[in-house]
Image (tube, rainbow, N blue to C red):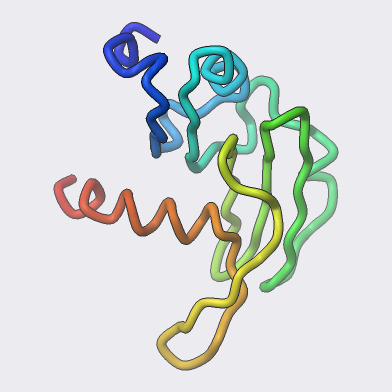
Length: 121
């Protein structure tokens, strides 16, 4: 919260890595007019346990919603868990290297906006 203090109450959309991702932070940000999207570790406190009960195969998608917060679990080449207060759960089509794939809009936005951060690491 201290790191975000200068950005609160200004309507920003923040894209964060799994290090800063937990449902409690998302709930606090909703009252501060700040929207968040990020990948999340499935063992974080507050994550819905029933989201991870079943094994997934490539292409499987599942989500849970609590108010405006949406937790999703999607499996492409590996499992991707995201939290978002911006995006809705439906999938969108994206063009891959060899085929058309369905990905969650939050995941595609996350990749788009975080790609430069990943290159700088």
